[in-house]
Length: 76
Image (cartoon, rainbow, N blue to C red; front, top):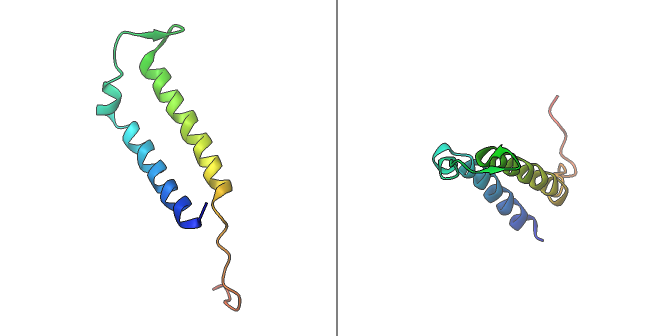
């Protein structure tokens, strides 16, 4: 994948995580359903958190490191 596409995907991934955790969206999943005795909203939030952590780990490996240009010194 090209660097620009990976950076754009990482931005979209971050915005998706933010929008998926916004309270009005979470309210769509508020019903009296349970998954293995755990409220469905809790399962949704924990699943979203796991998905975002795994995605961030993948993006940290996929994004190339920013190396300083040769001949440029760092400021003290």
